[in-house]
Image 1: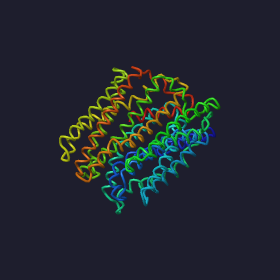
Image 2: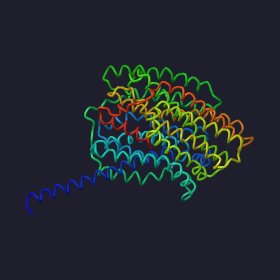
Image 3: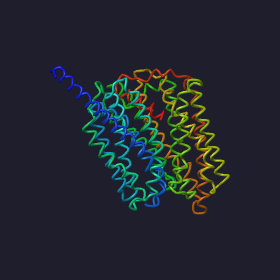
Image 4: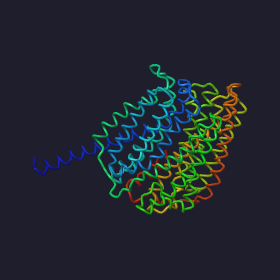
Length: 510
């Protein structure tokens, strides 16, 4: 063998080794994404078990889910910037390690306060982990391979969304070692530890060449403003709506106004505010953010009250409730694929979105009618029709919404706009969870001592009126969105911006 042949053989081996390393790195990234997606959906189904174990109040249950969403939302943009500045692999591994530790703390929580604090930490660590995933994929794989890789990511997103509730139901139902709900968190430990070990070995480090600076003051102000609004909204009911709650909610307005003023100053100072306020001058974007928040609010209300209605009101097991939701998941996935491939190109984005909102509202009203007609004797098969309608409506909206909101945003701001959409999605979900105090628990608490099942049925109907009403607002806001989109704004100049945009599109399509 000549020296040239030897060199070619060596290069071939090195290329094969590098190729094997990046596919292992991809497996780590996809597993981390799956872990986050499952954790975001696995908890709701176990909430009744948590309540029985701790004897906790309904507001505690709200904070177990809302705390995660709020911490995730607040830290999302900052987490992406930390990866751009200090290294995506480094921040990703920090996020995975912190998420795993927080999962352990959730699993061994001795009281509701510890569980809520651990969920807040878990959300904050997810905000470090999640933004790095597609950024790392973007710099690891060449352009001609990304379509296949992002297709794999979309499949993981869909699998996580469907399997989360079922996995939560199974783990809770099995009562492994008498731990009840705790395995839904402890299952993350081996996955997270393996992710840190393999990620450190196989993921290559990368940074953005021109990363934006951190805006910690802006992050602090928006955190204070949202907590001042959401905390009394969540806990005020059980304290008979005290004066301090209304004072706190009123105080959130000047705090958020100060946040806006500071963001303007930050933009003039160094061009790296947490929120690019100039985006709201684009009519379709401003309306789209309103649609995003309102739609996510309905999701926050529905998914929590739906779980409690089935388990606490109807007395169903966690597994029974989890299996009942399968038609919703299947319809959502099928409608998402159909909307992108067939409906949006023919009807246009706005009509597709409005069709989704009306379909979901119709499903909510049908569900309300069935719940009132059949009462506590309602069966899973009788819920199938409204769940299919609601799932299909949700799929039509989520799959098309991002492109419609971004369609008129200048290309150089597409990354910032995409990050803000992700953030407002989580914030809207947290807001919906807080609103369940008014939409659901204000009814069930008044009557639970008299007629348990009847109270939950009545409260569920009350909440579904809220869901249908907010979806009506969503429908009207959609008139401000463009009729059609050209899909011309999916790339941004910075790598992290590209990754954020691609992630949002894949989540919607999944």
